[in-house]
Image 1 (cartoon, one colour):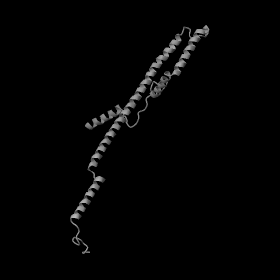
Image 2 (cartoon, helix red, strand yellow; image 1 turned 180 degrees about the vertical axis):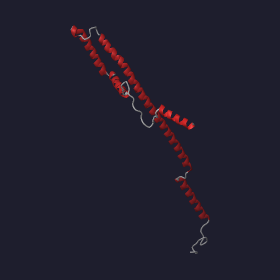
Image 3 (cartoon, rainbow, N blue to C red; image 1 turned 180 degrees about the horizontal axis):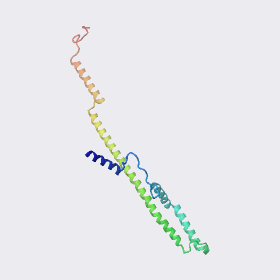
Image 4 (tube, helix red, strand yellow; image 1 turned 45 degrees about the horizontal axis):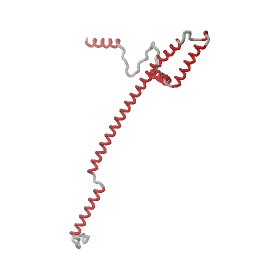
Length: 187
């Protein structure tokens, strides 16, 4: 009876939700809105924001406004494209400003994000440099301590010179006398 219940539960689970495989990517769902690349949009907005901040843009905008104003003042009535004095010009400039401000802010936010990433990388690099410097300092200190206990060339020379002096002093005290202590007759 219990075995049948567990089998029923397993069948219900299999029918209820299909198993999701984690080793395979999910299928793309159809979207109502078109997809766009946020990085491409950001790059384009940065290019526009950079152009809006150049002298070239200011010169072209000034020339356009001067031509617009002169045309609407001196052109004959039917050739004027702005019936009401400069309302369309005001609308165009307002529209340009309303798009320029968000684009400049978007470009500035992207630059802030890049700066934040660069600062984080610099901070990590500084931490690694400090850690490496501390490690090398500890190693140099250990080498210096170890060198204090190592026999140096000068110390060995001084010890050998002391031994030579001591041997010469013993030779002076105990001069070799004949065959005593010699192994010449044993040969």
